[in-house]
Each structure stands twice: as structure tokens, then as C-alpha cells.
Length: 182
Ligand SMILES: O=C(O)CCC(=O)C(=O)O
Ligand SMILES: [Fe+2]
Image 1 (tube, helix red, strand yellow):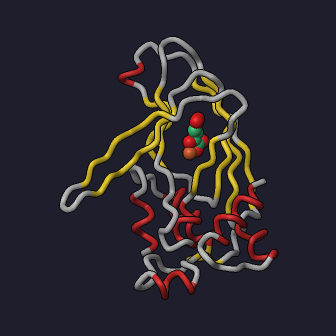
Image 2 (cartoon, helix red, strand yellow; image 1 turned 90 degrees about the vertical axis):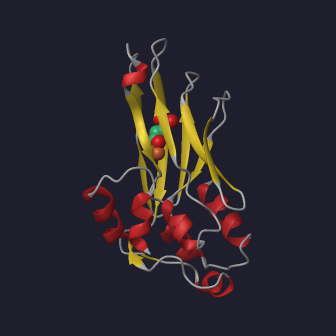
């Protein structure tokens, strides 16, 4: 399913990638199981702090507890408004998140989703994300055609392993680590 999604997203940018490259961009897969216990002081406690996923696409199954928020930014002429909106649980539905690698590859035509999870005093919560990411040896940079069209590459090319070392070596708030690839 992720392979098909990626194929469609890339085709939508009018870029053609061969099968082995597509496979390499989602070649590393990891599953987590997150448990958020009931919390007495939700206003004092972070469930999952604001971040974006570093890989290509994340497929997330959440139970019915709610609490997943995503940051939406709105740019007006000279102002920027940001808002956190809840992604409500829908039975049997999956949440698909764009990760940093896809933001870089698409030269920011797709933006990685900054998200966080709040705790609750009423109900515990379980979520199961499946992370897909490039193989560690894969070079990640804006796809050439997109850099040409979009007035230059917004990110420099990195080996994905280096990106991961940077990701786990620092814990910047939100999406700030993406700047480091520029
Ligand atoms: O629990 C969730 O809904 C999200 C978890 C998450 O963002 C993550 O594991 O990266
Ligand atoms: Fe996440």
C-alpha cells in the first residue's frame, strides 16, 4: 500500500522513478506500539512532543481515544497563522503522514506533518505507527527536475544514515532539524 501511495505522490509531481529507486525510498520499515497511560495532569504532561517523522511515509493506526494533533500553517501577505487541529479517530481508518524524507525529495512540494499527542485523564491510548524510510545508504535530495522547476534545491543532498545520526543525536523542537539539511 505504501509503495502504491508513493508511486502516486511521485507521479503527481511529474517525476518518474524506476521500481528499484521507489523500493529503496521505503526500504527501511519499522513498527512501534505506543501506549499512553491515563494521566492525572494532562496539562502538565506531554504524550508525544511536537515532531515530524523522519522517513518517507508513516501509516498510523490509532484507537478511539483521540489526542493526535497536527500543525496547520496559513500564510497571508505578511503574517503567518498556526493552528493545531485534532485528527479524530475514525474506526478502521489509517492516518498517513508525510515524513521529512519525502519533503526533501519533493523539494517541499509535500511538507512533512508536524504532530503531537496530548495525554488524557479519562482514557489510556494505544497507537501503532508503521514507519517507512529510505535505506540508510540511499542519497536523499530534491529530485533534479523539481529543483530546476522550483528555483533551486531547498535542501542539500544527504546520505540517509547521516540524516538519522543527526535526528537521533539532537532533539530539536518540532521540525527545526530540517533546516540542517539546507
Ligand atoms: O501516537 C500517535 O498517534 C503518534 C505517534 C507518533 O507520532 C510517532 O510514534 O512518531
Ligand atoms: Fe510521529
